[in-house]
Image (cartoon, rainbow, N blue to C red):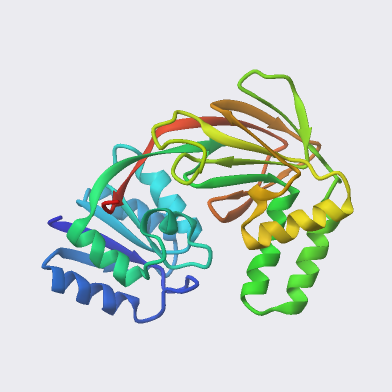
Length: 282
């Protein structure tokens, strides 16, 4: 790499105010030219300017939402993206760099990184590259973030809200033209992290999450907090390339760790070429 551009969102969870200085030092140590950007205002506009400058790679030190947005914005034809861990969940960084800190991952990418095409999924026109959760269990992410911050009262309030939403509006969906189904939630896993798909499989791993009573939804919420929801007995697995999901109101969603609200009817599809990542040798 001859020139890289680095975006350090110092307002993000675990980036830190000294991140720009550390990033500049690592660049100097590796003998790579680059500029460190610390956006104070419109983060999306900063991403757009950096990607449009066509560097050899863009390193993003930020949370899950910014990492996902950078990968989506660059796409398969833009510069490779290195999503370095700077948030709380760090779903995309962990998929590529394991438990490395962002300085360790950055140094490794500069010395050993290489572009790699990554597949992903699309929900309602928004891309994801690790996993998407559609339906009320996505609300448990808010409780989890409050718990990680040590905000006990807020954790309880958000958990109560998620519990109240359970069974209030089940999803209806059809995958790959199969018969319509109902479930409390639908989870989609990309080949990047799926344990049942090979990375060259041209499909998403789909899991219908359908607890039948309050005890099961509580157990599912706990497993969502701990990251072991796929082992829950109320989860049934399958595969899909395209699909449609609809509900009686706006659908809560979690795309690569980023919470959002989607419309009452959404389309799903697998994207075989979603973006290029700066990956490390396995």
